[in-house]
View 1 (cartoon, rainbow, N blue to C red):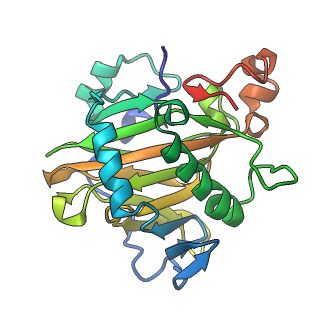
View 2: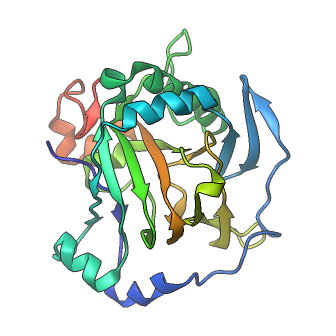
Length: 277
C-alpha cells in the first residue's frame, strides 16, 4: 500500500539553509497566551498558529501505547518533493533533509481507544481554536482521518527541512489535511536535541520569520493547522525521541479534490493511507 509522505517545497539553492536557522529567536516576540482549560483539556501554551495540550495522554495510556507500538517495525522515512526528479536516496545524500524511522497504522482498526482520543483532541481543541472542519448536529466531526504515523528519531536523526503538511493549491491527496496532531511519547529526560521548531508570523510585520522552539513532555500534544504552520524537527543529540502524528482531512479544502485529479474519486473511497469515515 502506498503511504503518504510529508511534503516539502524545495529549491536546490536553499539546501545550505538546513544547516542552521536563518531566523531570529521567538522567545520574546511570539505571543503565547496563559494556560487555559478547554473541554477538559489543559492548554499550557497557546499561539495563533499552534497550541500545546498538557498530558493529553495519561501515564497509563502511555504504558498501553508502549505495549501496542512495541509490535511495530519502523522503516526509513521518505520525502515527497513536488517538481523534482531526485530519488529519496539522492535527496538524503544531497540535502540531508530528513533522517528518521516511521511506521504507519490504522488506529481506528488496530487501537480504537487511541483513535478516539486523538479524534477527541481534534474535536475539542483543534477544531475549536481553528474551526476548519464541519460537524453534524451532535457535534461529531464530518471528516476523514489519515493513518497514524509512528515516528522514531535516534541519535543524529532529524527532519530539519522546513515544511508544512499540506497546501490548499497542492496537487496530491494529502493536501486535504486540515488539522495536525503531534503526540509526544518520550520523556524530556529521554533525549537531548530534537526540538520541534516553527516559523511564526512576526506580531509586527505579520511575516513568517520568527523562530519558536517547542519542547513537549511525554503525554503532551501539539495541535496546529496543517496548511499554515511551517515547521521542522531538529537533530537528536542523545537518546530516542518518539511521537505519533495524526491528521484530520477535508477533501473540500484543496484543489486536488475539488478541481484536480481527485475530483473524480468517490467520496467514500478513502484518501491514500486514510481510514474511511
